[in-house]
Length: 393
Length: 87
Image (cartoon, rainbow over all chains, first blue to last red):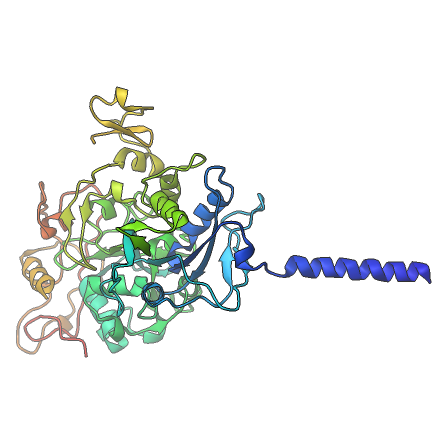
């Protein structure tokens, strides 16, 4: 009898331990949490930064996040809308990789305010876009957006005029092969992917024709698994596309007034974002991070630390955030040669005050022969040593 | 709207010698008004901007990047070859 009781006690103990292990922790119990409400195209970046930061000896924090549409995120931080659903965070386990799902944590009954809201477009097109005096926006990396088709499609390019009809008119306005609205996979009108591309083809966000999918991965899967490859088309952030190039292919895009269509990169297979950086590919937007501020400075030191990393203003002792940003298909401002001031607006030539072109090109391929490696400014002939390469300024 | 006008103006000046769109010269591109819209949105051409300054020069700057020429067929163009408003 004693053996049976002992076995039962042991079994119950094991069961309880397993149950405890599977119960998500409360988000507030995680050390140094920073609450983020982000667009899902930035999840790969936040997961990668979160993994570094949770192990950082310099400034350890937990990035606790939830994904939603860009304009929804802006509205939430402006109106103080609390997050009440479960959130996600990067586990501390060293065996965890960014290819794995994040872990869930539970939010306290009263909910939690986001410390940072992320928009992956200029906020001007959003219904709520007045940040008042207690919030500030900080511009992060540039994100291209792409039209995607199944790998089995023969299509290689789409012009702005074609996209105008395909997404603005029933049955694609007769523009073959994209004439079936049930095979056009789009995003809801509060999502950056749709808003950015809408501004580039002059189709109002509320007028898009197609099947809206809430998550980028849903568009990705719908396009990849389509039973009618030729007439299928979808839209994605390049960060998501770059991580899933084996599943779908992107189309080159020809903007209004442009002679040829171009990919975000120099070729369909490259990852250098050359055409995004020099203005041949126009479908891109800035990533924007909004947080409470005083005098334009974030009031949360954790928020400021993360924003400084994303803007490339600060390097953690254990990692260079720009390497992570570049690896996720984003283009840091310091590598851009063009800029714009509004969604879909005209491009202007741009010279960053602290350029990082050589570093950027070293990360996406091989730095040009004109780029010289350095450890400090002394070998840069009056220039600056930035991220291991001499830059002009 | 300005971009559309510029697009139409530039594209009208362009020419192309090849197409990757089998239907590029479909008769449906000619409207009832007798205006031939076939080539208006073809793009292509050999000119590129060596020292780009303006938006149109920047997006049409000379480059070694892969470029794709496309001759779209746009059946619903207006009689004057402009894009119809979205309803």
